Length: 212
Image 1 (spheres, one colour):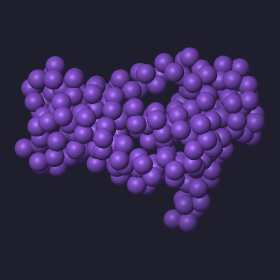
Image 2: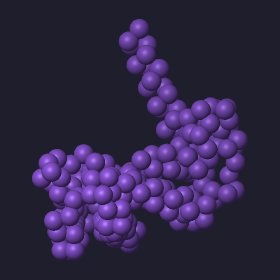
Image 3: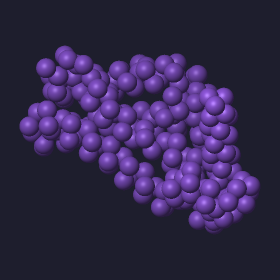
């Protein structure tokens, strides 16, 4: 029974990955708006209902693997230990992601990740979803800090500043990847750049949100 369940899960995972890659290839070739879900289903050799069983919407075919990462910084703040500031928590998490070459911070060797970014940049509705998801992540961090500090204004300033620094680093990674640099070449100086960015934030937020 366990072996059967394991096989079933692997088949589901493989089917989901096939649908995702097929959709991405079609979006790159023809544009997001010019590809229907039915066409994706046909090219993936599944039914349209199966596509929706794995992905709730056409937009999810692009965002499903990445959208949870918009809340990474908020999770770092939520899970930080006593004596750790919000800045240190976000910095620590980011450095850990650099260490493992996490695709969500723009350090990867997979061409399809660049293709996802290209599709998003070329599609207004997807760019809008990025903005909404990013704002949701900032709001989650703001709510955490406001609850701890009792000052929603400063919490908003802190969350926005931390998110801006983090996003600037990620955008730099993506820009350099698109220019042809290798992930390893970018990663070689990524730790130093991250420290400089978060040090800059810390100078303004020094002593703020140190967990008791």
